[in-house]
Length: 288
Image 1 (tube, rainbow, N blue to C red):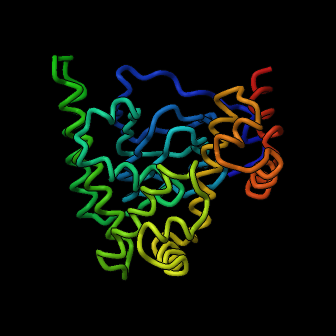
Image 2: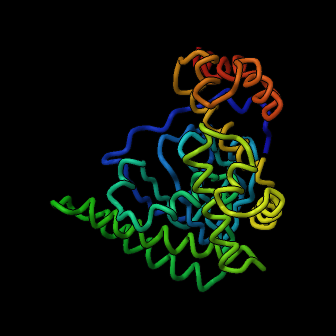
């Protein structure tokens, strides 16, 4: 898949009724799919497929027995002639709030650091279970509206998210349940405290372990160091602010707890190879 001109045909996702939708993909062929900037979180359950998808300028093969998890604000598009048989599930944060609080940690683990869970391979038994759940959700979604329909859909979504979170945990080979919980807690802490602290030591202290232990744990669970995960959260939030608002760079820097705008600009460029102002210009000039 070609990565040049990634921003040249960007489209913004259209509003979805009630911030929730389920689509059945019956050998759906993506012939000329433009780059889409997500307004909603997205789950693709791929039963069968071929081709590839570009997510935040990283290419992933589209094959059967797979899940793709995309968070709002991410950019994605399918390569031409990509074919998928499965389901596409979209939901906004406002809809997720209808789900019981007991499932909130699952969303944090899966979507707050989406790049670590972008593609999950699943076995035939897991596929069969998820296929049944998605089919039930699709059937309910297709019914005529009734008073408590959003609550019913949110309950089904909760079950699916719990099942996917369990699959994600099972993929962390060799990590016992205690260490797995530590890693998930770290991801949750980063998602709520990245504006307050950027230091691995601060998060490690909250977890009662050493910074080295936390870094080793993150590398084993996700292939990324603890600092990489923190930086990834900061970059994702910075990109959203640059794309979706006209807030000055200096205010974004202050919002993300950088000492100076220059420090923020240096950090952003080191991680994206482009300055914050130039990144924003990519979007300002789209469609002009």
